[in-house]
Image 1 (cartoon, rainbow, N blue to C red):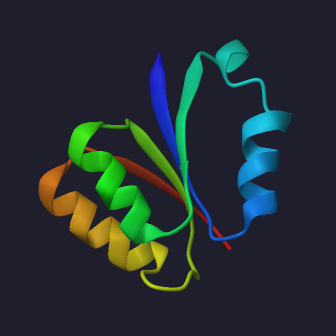
Image 2 (cartoon, rainbow, N blue to C red; image 1 turned 90 degrees about the horizontal axis):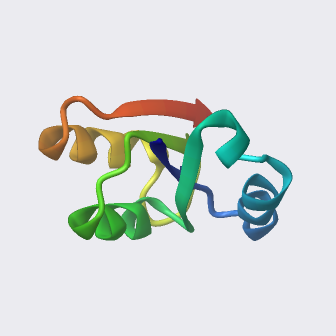
Image 3 (cartoon, helix red, strand yellow; image 1 turned 90 degrees about the vertical axis):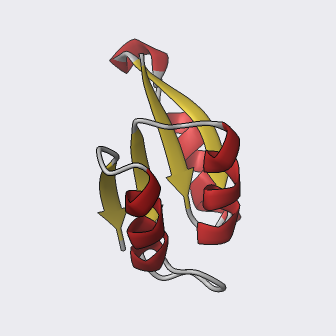
Length: 83
Protein backbone atom coordinates (compact mmCIF):
# COMPACT_ATOMS: atom_id res chain seq x y z
CA UNK A 1 0.00 0.00 0.00
CA UNK A 2 1.34 3.45 -0.90
CA UNK A 3 1.81 5.77 2.07
CA UNK A 4 0.51 9.30 1.51
CA UNK A 5 1.45 12.43 3.48
CA UNK A 6 -0.88 15.40 2.96
CA UNK A 7 0.41 18.91 3.80
CA UNK A 8 -1.81 22.00 4.00
CA UNK A 9 -2.10 24.90 6.42
CA UNK A 10 -5.91 24.89 6.05
CA UNK A 11 -7.47 22.65 8.73
CA UNK A 12 -10.65 22.19 6.69
CA UNK A 13 -8.65 21.01 3.67
CA UNK A 14 -6.75 18.52 5.86
CA UNK A 15 -9.96 17.18 7.38
CA UNK A 16 -11.69 16.92 4.00
CA UNK A 17 -8.74 15.13 2.43
CA UNK A 18 -8.75 12.62 5.27
CA UNK A 19 -12.52 12.05 5.42
CA UNK A 20 -13.86 12.41 1.88
CA UNK A 21 -11.52 10.09 0.00
CA UNK A 22 -11.58 6.35 0.57
CA UNK A 23 -7.80 5.95 0.50
CA UNK A 24 -7.84 2.23 1.29
CA UNK A 25 -10.18 1.57 -1.63
CA UNK A 26 -7.54 3.16 -3.88
CA UNK A 27 -4.81 0.99 -2.38
CA UNK A 28 -3.29 3.97 -0.60
CA UNK A 29 -2.87 4.79 3.08
CA UNK A 30 -3.13 8.41 4.24
CA UNK A 31 -0.58 8.14 7.04
CA UNK A 32 -0.49 11.76 8.22
CA UNK A 33 -1.83 15.25 7.57
CA UNK A 34 0.71 17.97 8.34
CA UNK A 35 -0.11 21.65 8.92
CA UNK A 36 3.02 23.02 7.18
CA UNK A 37 6.35 22.05 5.67
CA UNK A 38 8.15 21.96 9.01
CA UNK A 39 5.53 19.61 10.49
CA UNK A 40 5.84 17.36 7.41
CA UNK A 41 9.64 17.21 7.63
CA UNK A 42 9.44 16.37 11.33
CA UNK A 43 7.06 13.52 10.53
CA UNK A 44 9.42 12.25 7.81
CA UNK A 45 12.28 11.89 10.30
CA UNK A 46 10.57 8.79 11.73
CA UNK A 47 8.23 7.77 8.89
CA UNK A 48 8.82 7.64 5.18
CA UNK A 49 5.85 8.30 2.90
CA UNK A 50 5.83 7.27 -0.75
CA UNK A 51 3.94 10.32 -2.00
CA UNK A 52 3.48 13.83 -0.60
CA UNK A 53 0.44 15.83 -1.63
CA UNK A 54 1.11 19.42 -0.64
CA UNK A 55 -0.22 22.92 -0.85
CA UNK A 56 2.34 25.32 -2.28
CA UNK A 57 1.61 28.47 -0.28
CA UNK A 58 1.87 27.95 3.47
CA UNK A 59 3.28 29.96 6.36
CA UNK A 60 6.59 29.04 8.01
CA UNK A 61 7.74 26.80 5.13
CA UNK A 62 6.04 26.53 1.75
CA UNK A 63 5.56 23.32 -0.20
CA UNK A 64 8.37 23.96 -2.69
CA UNK A 65 10.95 24.62 0.02
CA UNK A 66 9.80 21.53 1.92
CA UNK A 67 10.10 19.42 -1.25
CA UNK A 68 13.67 20.62 -1.88
CA UNK A 69 14.72 19.61 1.62
CA UNK A 70 12.85 16.29 1.52
CA UNK A 71 14.43 15.41 -1.86
CA UNK A 72 17.90 15.74 -0.30
CA UNK A 73 17.03 12.90 2.08
CA UNK A 74 14.62 10.90 -0.09
CA UNK A 75 15.44 11.43 -3.79
CA UNK A 76 12.83 8.88 -4.96
CA UNK A 77 9.92 10.62 -3.19
CA UNK A 78 7.00 11.69 -5.39
CA UNK A 79 5.22 15.05 -4.97
CA UNK A 80 1.83 16.33 -6.04
CA UNK A 81 1.31 20.06 -5.54
CA UNK A 82 -2.03 21.79 -5.03
CA UNK A 83 -2.66 25.48 -5.09
